[in-house]
Length: 293
Image (cartoon, rainbow, N blue to C red; front, side, top):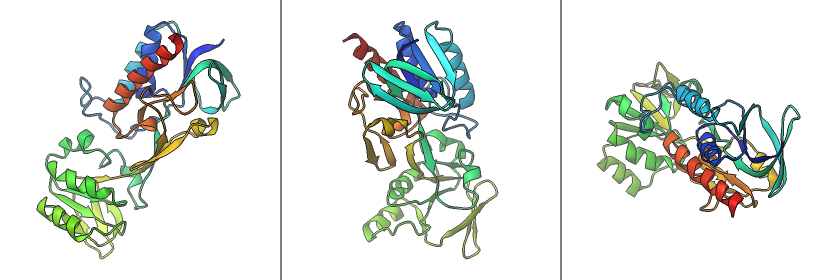
């Protein structure tokens, strides 16, 4: 059965887009591999009406609400390939199933390339974060460490003192110039030049000279890329951002391939659940308009 829209990715942005289309009584098929980017976090913050709620519960409830619409088909699986053109796309999953559709929406989210620091990966989303608006308040104005990954970490270190006394751990990633150092000093940021050896405890940093720095929480800037290569393989342009790469879209969320759209973390910066939901809702409305006009 041909669909009006196939949504690749059933997390917050994908579901927000699907909701707009379902309420327009369009046939929507969502393909979801069940790997939300924030699956490591126990609480979601900064999302109006859902502050402090387990992100898994937000996703579960949203899916339950979508399933109440009779024109939704939900497929648990992984999209492997998309081909074709506007009004005649086909999506193939890893198990060989094929789905025909008039429009495509890539809501795949992103993957995070984390700095190569021992102990960081297992603390990601629990005591090591990327967004202070999402997790800074809960640190209760305690000491914060910012593990630099490059020049963009300067901006992160400049912002973090809003949530607590901040130490910028350069870790050999970049060298601030005199003006940047002066700015950090004015903001009360401590600059630590000794490289990081590993993380210990909840959020403590062991330096290569043996010192142990204790923090309430840590922040770092991961390098992101779309979590699936399907959009790029279709021919959608990928663009560089200060945070990594994303699928290029216009103001209507359409990619460089006519009839294929993208939204959420895979197609916008910066990233948060709130912004992903808003971006998805807009993409869903624009997808519907493309079917009407």
